[in-house]
Image (cartoon, rainbow, N blue to C red; front, side, top):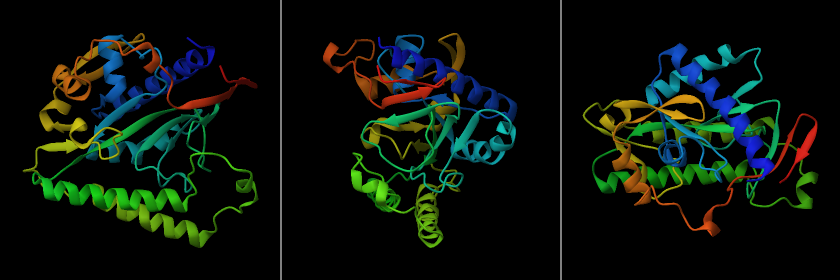
Length: 273
């Protein structure tokens, strides 16, 4: 495995340890999601060729984390990047960044703050009726696309971009209004306790792949992860089977590639492989 991904993993492990400490100190419940959950179960750590970490919290715990973590991170080299803490950040979920690093991501050119990160997703209540589910998702995707376009998220870097002036105060205010509307769509069902399913609305997977029962994301068990102890759903086998099928089987070698990062700068050095 490349020196680049080994370095990324070491930094991400520090991010994850800091996140776990925050959750412990704030009495917040979290779980690993997606490929990180798969890595914890199949590899007892990172999937060797995967270069990100995904965690999730139910919306009330997620909101407490966003409200209280920044003060606890003051004086550290970590930054909690959210749609509100970074005006140029367009995604609908948080990232915990290591500020001692700088990265360039594949197919993701933008003006948001950069550093090795872990992704922190809110898990939101969703309606039961498929038509209402589609309506919520359509609205979410519409606002999400508008925000990314207005914040100049691009797949590739072009020479013209360096000639663009930064967004002005009025433009950023317009984007913030869109972010607020997106947030309202995501939390539209928060106050309905009769709804017992939650979803990672920002998921890269098809709709039903990251829909969970409340029991699945609150009945948790500790497992090892690269020397740390992390929380995962006790019902991880059902979740991973729904997402990946035979989740213990390794994919073909030609699919074992890093997905996200092209370049890392740390310790006054540039790493690309």
